[in-house]
Amino acid sequence: MPGMALEGGRRSVGEKGAPAGAVVWGAYRSPAGPRLTTREGRRSSMTSSWNGPLEPAGECRWKIPVSYKAGMKVPGLIYASPAMLEDIRADQAAEQVANVAHLPGLVRASLAMPDIHWGYGFPIGGVAATGVEDGVIAPGGIGYDINCGVRLLRTNLAAKKIRDKMETLVSDVFHAIPAGVGSQGPLKLDRGQLEQVLTQGAAWAVEQGYGWAGDLEHCEAGGRLAGADAAAVSGRAQKRGSPQLGTLGSGNHFIEISVVDEVFDQATADVYGLEAGQAVVWIHSGSRGLGHQVCTDYLEVMGRAVTKYGIKLPDRQLACAPVKSEEGQNYFAGMAAAANYAWANRQVMTHWVRQTLAKSLGTTPEDLGLQLVYDVAHNIAKFEEHAVDGKMRKLCVHRKGATRAFGPGHPELPARYREVGQPVLVPGDMGRASYILKGTAVAMQETFGSACHGAGRVMSRTEAKKGVRGSELRRRLALEGVIVRAGSDASLAEEAPEAYKDVTQVVDATQRAGLAGLVVRVRPLGVIKG
Image (cartoon, rainbow, N blue to C red; front, side):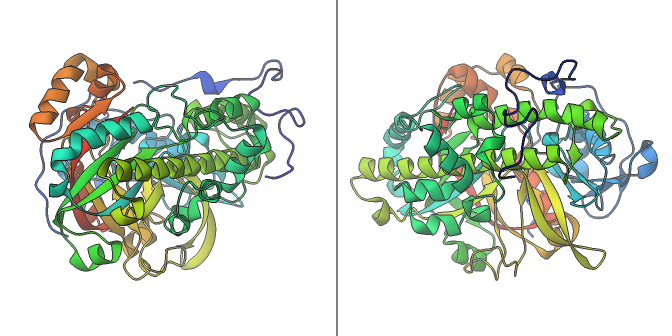
């Protein structure tokens, strides 16, 4: 929090001089509506299979009972169709759901979305809400890529009118947005500018001319998480972030031009400004090296805090501290700063995408109608009010590989969307499809307003590179009408469609469970990968 001292006085965490004998846990890593038709995914061999209990608990709901493991404070609840259970049991992600149920102050259940797979501490696809008064905050419940998230831009373009220009458009955007591991952009922030980014988020970018005023209204939290403090971000993290604003990064980050190919809910699609045949643009990225360093730094702090506060955990990767403790408050301030950096990062890229596409097509961004539909965070912890046992309660909601999915009537939604619910953006892989859904009352009641965030991996990156050649994948996608540019063939192979669950199956389970409602499906036309 602003003005709060860090470990060792005003020295930022993660710098040299940690107390002798400190237990450094951060160095440890993990092992590797309508019914929709699906395509069978490939089973993962990332970790050994899991044979624990999954008791039916309703439509697309499976419970891990408290009796499964000593120390569980609440049950685990996994949302998935019966057909998805084989992939879910293929690694130890369900065990992580049970482990998260040990956290002090956990409310209702340890939750997992249909795209669940193995992660650091928490499974990816995990959701957990803890009480502010009696609960903890855990970096493993947010992850290393703090506020990795996605935004969607609509256009006035019919996709069929730009198909013959797709190769040029993809190439131009690829050259305009720095991508790849360690990529740096043309913006070089001095210390004062970076501190403004860390506290102001997307608003800083808009004020500097990188965006339109209406963009902020269509970002989760307005593109800025309150409580951020630049002093809670280490010097090393700030150094890593200074040259990376406006860059895509690597891994599963992407920019994609897609076409809306099916509308399931015409009324809601109209509200979101979406229609069949329309070209839309996705931007998926996060807080880059700055966020990674913030997580690394605070895992060390939390490792010590577990001992200090006598917290008993089944997995050291769940290192945490009470929400109201000095360590917990400092982590939230640093995490919020990294989240704000991510929102600013996506905002700057949005500006450059608008400028690039307009130049390539000989027009202006305004004439193209490149308006922001919405921007959602996938990896974040936020303080939110939710109904628990009939009473409103302030909670610390951890979402790791999960999307906020607030239902109709929520006051935090833009006025335009309030009647139908929040846009829920669910990108798939670059060979199949992505979906836009809407939040529901069921999600508010059961999952603290949360839903799935994507397809979910079924194959490790190493496994994908062994089984897929990037050059062959590029040619295969081109034959299917998808133009792809990537930093390298190796990075392209890591993101092969077969490395992921079929997002249609994930979305089908999500809507059958009532957590989100189908609005439209889109298909990729051109993809830029890091």
